[in-house]
Image: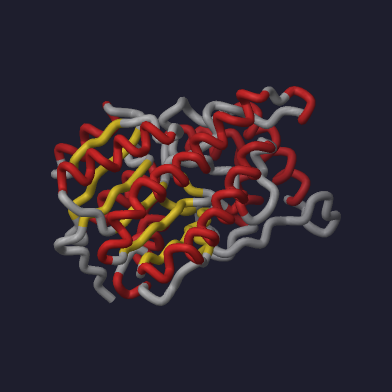
Length: 288
């Protein structure tokens, strides 16, 4: 199956690194004109060198998202699809509920939910004109509790799944499909690499033992799923959440029958505490 995006314009958020960058590149390789959006302007420069247009903005604010999408429309004259890959844990680590501040809570929602909402709102009029695609990048943390231990992160990803489904209902009559990809553990940037190393050999073996395919994901694995959902071949798929996690069967907490189970849970907790997600431009957290 070949997904051909020739003549179509796609906006990709969180495009400066990791999953967002992989999606932007795969869309461009498939013929799309790609507008790359991210708060990290410097991180967008390699994509510009590859022929994409850069639209740096703080997408967590309604005004910032509107201005960014307006700049895409001004530059390209149309918009056929939106992929929202911006998000992450914004430098936070798991802490007890009693220690969470209002800012801790809201900054993660702004990155993961608000950005998707305001970009979709800004893009909707253009997408409605000829039909189109919206693909959100959620997480396994949007389907179950997150091993990050970050209350706001799993709440935000659950909210993003809900937003995806609601927009699918609203925009479907206008020929706009809205779907989500929920990644598993993906080595997509230096921070995820450090978290993997922090597990240690035994924790790494335990993690891989809980994945049917016995390997970690890559940003390209997620990109292929997202690009399929953005394609003409997915025209009758909407309101769906596609887990892309290699098959998930984590060891049960405290299982006496699984020698690696206890090591898995304790290593995950330690790694989540010692290796926070990198900086404000980070686009995906690995602990799903």
